[in-house]
Image (tube, rainbow, N blue to C red):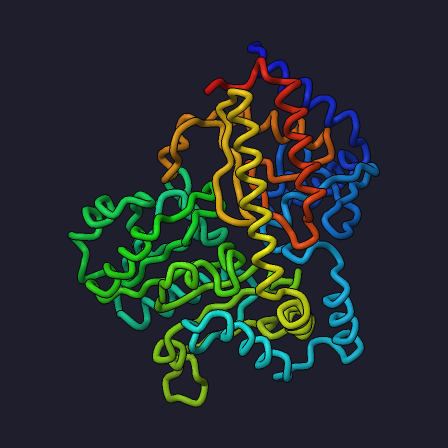
Amino acid sequence: MSSLDQALAQAIERYRQARPASERIHAEAMRALPGGNTRSVLFFPPFPPAMARGEGCWLWDADGHRYLDALGEFTAGLYGHSEPAIRAAITEALAGGLSLSSHTAREGALALELQRRFPSMELLRFTNSGTEANLMALATATAHTGRRKVLVFKGGYHGGVLAFAGGGSPVNVPHDWIVARYNDLDDVQARVAPHCGELAAILVEPMLGSGGCIPGDPAFLLGLRALADETGALLILDEVMTSRLSFGGRQALLGLRPDLTTLGKYFGGGLSFGAFGGRADLLQRFDPRASGALQHAGTFNNNVLTMAAGLAGLTQVLTAGRLQALNDRGDALRERLNALLASRGVALQFTGLGSLMTLHPVAGAIRSADDLAAADDRVKALVFFELLARGVFMARRGFVALSLPFEQATCDAFTQALEGLVYAHRAVLPNL
């Protein structure tokens, strides 16, 4: 057994011994759920922690451990835990009754607020998740163009049935996919050229999110806009994660106007939410007043709790200034962490933009999923378990998403925890 394997095994055993309640909860769940799990991304062996409560940017598990929440519910937890204005809005909505079987005033108000932030969404519709939003955007594109081929990118993630890491997922929906290399217009052109007249859509994240927080080069993303115009395909910008990078998402930062935009995550104020929208001529096909209108159902598309929580978050909490300050803190933290790692001669780095980042155990520039081929997952695992032991909770894959309550003092705590980890395990971490 190598020194790295030994250090990892010891870290995992310490984790197990310190969390008997979480282990019991997981064992009980396995009686009804495969692997005790109903959301794949949350599982890691030997068992995940069972969280009992959260406050601000802190979490407590069933065994009483407190963690700095550096995961932020995979970007959905932008507001932190139990934000007062959102709690008040949910309480008010509860008093008015659930499942009202009709329209309410809140859904139009929330839609207008989103439209104000994203002018490219001339009309929009709600769904229950970002996955659904992307499915509906693709359905819109194929219905509008009468075509079936969709350009996506290796390492891209647009939902549980739209995942393109490692050659794609066997549960992906059966569109006719063309999979190209991210940040590589030459590769895109070569793969699309034989199918120019068949391309329905280009579905892209302005920064690969689950694929490693790899920012899209502005020239690459603007080149995709030009390709869509040339081929008659629709450009779908998946801003489910990157919408938080500015008041109007990354499309506003780049001056990029897609045909369709998809949203999700924090826009529901911590509750289930998704939205797709874009050019009026595309979305008007869903107008139920029109003959032959496209159908789009969903019992909970406009559920009163999400509408109330989402509206309260956008109108009472998430100002442009607060969002900019959060992204500034994220940029500063990422630079600080990378400077620390470089000064210790460790081949680890954080990539990302603003309040989103991912840790990679590789040296050199990272521009596509191919650049991560040499990454040693054991290093990520060791960092993950050792940060947990130091009271920092992030994704097992190294993903970090800051929340509004994640202030400078918590950035300092995160940095100190990583510094202590590097000091303790420098001998087994990869060298620059």
